[in-house]
Image 1 (cartoon, helix red, strand yellow):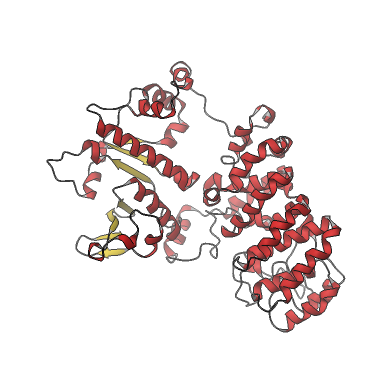
Image 2 (image 1 turned 120 degrees about the vertical axis):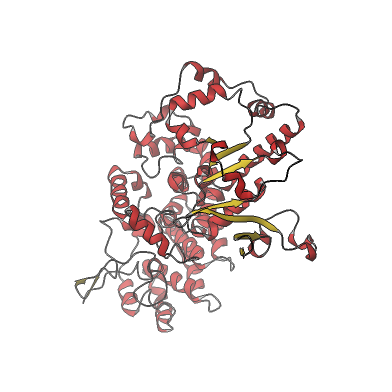
Length: 534
């Protein structure tokens, strides 16, 4: 982004990061004398309100992704997009208005507020009745809720539909009705829902989790899976049991959620969708669940979703030896980051815990990683941590070497190695992840979320004080992950820093720098260390 002093605007140019975003034509194909190419201009129309003028549906989608990647949502979010169809409305005899001129008179904007429609059954019924006769408005306003809830793909689909409508209108000598165009595209008769809406307005939807007597068995597979996008972390154990009882027939639908890249960066209620999908796939088990769960392992590490990464070892332990092949491939992948490889090794160890015949091969590989001096210090130290958890006495000398060399500094020391030789620490590898759905666990998560919620004035103060480009993970951003993770419950076991020399210490956030001074995050450093006393 560069600032244009003459027109007092920010310009998003086809350079830098934008070169890799897939715009046609490729940047290298543009003659140098035609550069720079301006993709979007940003105008401050009033304090705290920015208008971004992009002039195409493709640029709008890509700008949203670019904007959302580089600017924390606590600082700014897209609220609306206003669509002005130059093809169908602009008078060729007149100059095209300046971008900011579109917004000087907002009374001309037809605002299709999806949120208001969804919460008002009467308004929804009226819109359904009118939809067959409605023509295209010159200027329409829409909320960006779909992008933030459903990701980039939903936005791309919506923009392609708008392009089709624009071209149809351009080719027609009279106003077209979008409803007719959509029917032509899908080759189906008018949906029955439009007819029924004229006589029977729909009742407001009740959240599934709010209904204590919900008959889950009456819901279709598609309806059950849809709930993981809308009910946050409040779905009950009865829901989980019903999904699990469907077995392999519902695995494909859960696979679409667990292994779909865009499902992992949604916000709001939909943030929990991949968490549910992974937990339920793990409980169903079988060979069909292995590939989507392997993909989920990679995505969970990429998006730092601890609710998934911390539950994957017992999940893969249940899947058994058939999962060892793809897990081994991740461990041996030199280009994979050390956290992903550590999670894969922990999953292999969990398989060996349930299937002792695999023990020798699994821990031979983990010890090989810990021994290899060509490996990075982080992955070697964490491989040693797994050996320590399982009290692998044959590798005691290796563990002491990692300590003496400083590789394991801040993670474990000589005292931990000596103690670990006669005391295993296997809770992380065999606990029941479906406790997530227990009523007391659901209630506890809701209480903790309310305690963390900032008052509006304080939230604004924090957002305004945040530096641009700050790492949201280090700042423990609750808009992305409402809770720190499964171990953040009030009754979680004490960690190494909760009590030292018999004195209670201030609790350290999982994503804060570790107080031991290693420079690592607490969750990747001293969190798993056993409690030490004077």
